[in-house]
Amino acid sequence: MSPLAWLRRLAVSFGIGTTSYIIMLGIMVVSIVYDRETEPVITLAFDTGRSIVSAFDSLVSGSHWGQVAVNHLRERVNMTHVVLSIPAVLVASLIIGVPLNKWLGGTRTALQRIIIALTSVPATVVLAVVLFSFNALVPDAYAALLRFADWVWQMSLNGLSASDDIVPGARKLTNAARQGFSGHHYVIMALCSMVASFLVNAIFALAANARREEPLPHEMA
Image (tube, rainbow, N blue to C red):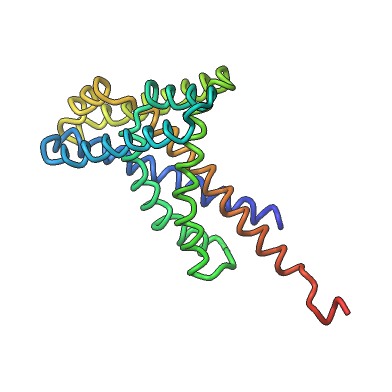
C-alpha cells in the first residue's frame, strides 16, 4: 500500500475523532441547558454503564487482575460519559468516515465503507474499556494520557468561555461544565475512536490486498 493510502486513513481517523469530540461537547451543552428534559437519557446512560461494569465483574469473577481492572472501571471511570459518547462516535463514523473514505480516494464500495464505519464503533468501545481497565499495568503512560486529555478538555472550555460575546451564556455554561463534568473521558473516547477507525480501516485494506494477491486456481496448476 502506498504512503498516500496511509495518509488517507490517518485523515479519515482524525476527522472521525475530531467530529465525535465536537458532538460530545454538544451532548454536554444539551445536558446542562436542558437538564430536566435530558434526565431520562442521562439516567439510562448511567444504568447502562453500571450494567456493563456488572457484566464485566461477573465475567472476571475469580481472576485477580480481572477484579483489579473492574474495580478501577467502577471507581475511576465515568461510565455515563463513556456510554453517552458512543452515539457521537457512531454519528461521526457515518457522516464523516464514509464520505471521507470516498472523497480521499478510497476504492471500496459504499457498502464496505459503511461496514468499516459501523465496525469502528464497537472497536472504539473495546479499545476504551481495555484502556480504562488495565491502565494499572502502565500507570505512567496512562497518567500522561490523562494530563493530555485534561489539557484538551480545559482548552475546549476556555474556547467556549471566550465565545461569551457571540454565544450568550457561554461563560456560565463553561463554569457549570467545570464543576460537573470529568470531560477527559470524552477526550479519551475521541482518541480511541481515531485509533479504532485507523486500525479497522487498515485491517480491511490488508485483508483486501491479501485476497487480491492470492493466486487463482489456474495459476496454481
